[in-house]
Image (cartoon, rainbow, N blue to C red; front, top):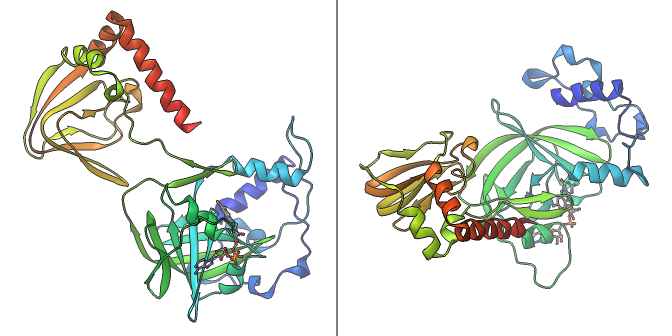
Length: 344
Ligand code: FAD
């Protein structure tokens, strides 16, 4: 909340404050929250920390016309997020709703914040002391997102819930949290609930994303060279030198400059990065993107499982091979163009 207060001050200086037709007296009593104890507002943030801002007109930037509320919504839509299903239980009734207004707040104590439309049923079910679940959806769970957003279609999947800490969590999601509401705040036409996290876990996979009012996803495994026809790829690999790695030996580390492409010839290599842990074996390439953009650095730790034999092709050798065979360069451009098209 501290950041929010700072932001408010900066906005006022620039006369770019969001319109908020607040009437002091219209705040529901649940938002008259006494701030006290360890997570109260530091004095430096002033008395406005927990008060409703006064009304100001929303000024639109150059080139933006029409309904300011739509322009505001579209502006916010430029902020890419994941997608969650928030869930809670009242008696035997399990209720879920799709939400992307979820953010981490604090590590110690572990706190998260959700923002819920005051018209949503979910809002009426949450009060200080109640628990809610957060299920971070996986890339293929667009149907569940639609279901819990109240969209109607015949082919939407059924959801199944697992109960953890007496709280329903959507099965098959990428990450799960259970939090207990410790504060609730007035948030205009939304309600803000600060939750102290009691349970957290995550698995492997890719998150579902939301941007500009539509679902997006991260690009799948970044294969580039491995999509070249063998007759174009083999002469490139033939330029490389043999490498041997002992069991457990690092093959590459996150952040290192990625100036080599590696082909695993024998053995197994383990790829580890947050949210991904997988094995790669003979015939698979490592560092296909980094070798084209070495400054970006390696994005995963990779180590040998047992002994591994690989062929390393340096960036210079690779560029020389592409210069020597324009057919390979042209095929590479086509592969890259196809990858871009996948995300468009
Ligand atoms: P309802 O509209 O009654 O329920 C939502 C849907 O979930 C209904 O179809 C209902 O049948 C189904 N459902 C509920 N419980 C179960 C169950 N146990 N089993 C099976 N189905 C069930 N709104 C916000 O307030 N904040 C946000 O941050 C937010 N982010 C969003 C992000 C995205 C990507 C989308 C698509 C929507 C978002 N919304 C957000 C809108 C919000 O999801 C909808 O307004 C939703 O309908 C509000 O739910 P509700 O609590 O009013 O309940």
